[in-house]
Length: 393
Image (cartoon, rainbow, N blue to C red; front, side, top):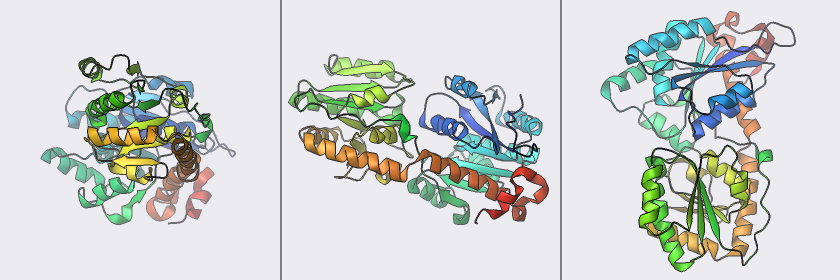
């Protein structure tokens, strides 16, 4: 399948960008890719996606906006899958290959070299990196052919430089962003209404919902009417539901599964909780703050670049259910403080995590990588060649 061609004003075609991901399952990384293709300048960029493993449930949303999705599949060895990806890229002929996270970087970097793709951009969405010696060596080899490394947080950038050995000059930070127009600020909740918190995310070990459930047990001991909504699905759901029963929280904790639209859940809460042990810049956290929700989040990864303690919420250590519970109780007891921090949270997202600015930063980066000083004017479509040379280095 070839990428869609939206055309340009002079009819000579847009810049072709292919995103490589592991899958299009539910997750923050996948939502970032969806936003990049949904809000991109269609008159200048033609986007398509390649999944290394399987397409996943989000593939339908890409289909709705006319973005093709190809699948390599899990069969065969890593070298075999790299060759299949290289053959596909030779057909698609992208100007830019954009890989997302370690597996995609390993496969995409080498495949792009074999298929002679002019430019490769890689986004590091968190602290993940390849530890297996043989694959780590191959990943470092692939990184040599990567034009630019993007980290979604300063924390992820430090991992890229200090642990993975990426040259500082090729690493830059572009924080994730959201469309704030999709999230109206929730109305103030009645002072006497039962207090309610919400968390949104995949039910996987890295999100550490078990610590959150233990914290909720302590909160309920002090505030018996307290409620928690857990929005999201994943492999740990049966285990977490069993823990809810063991903690006696059947009537206090509600599992809602995956929800394409979460605004309603955010609007009905007093605060947002994120108990992860690792994060890049959480899309769920940004969406909650855009809804006017203060957040209590673990002090890991990019969370400290989003939440300002005492202003937009609070940060707590990871895996510390007692401290998490104490902070939740303190926030819930201060209705005026919840409203004040919620307003500040909305302003923070509007000013610092605007999705349209993020998309423009990536598009400028694509053109920068295709500038004549790097790959030659013949590789840049005429429709954008003039713009590509104007992009500041």
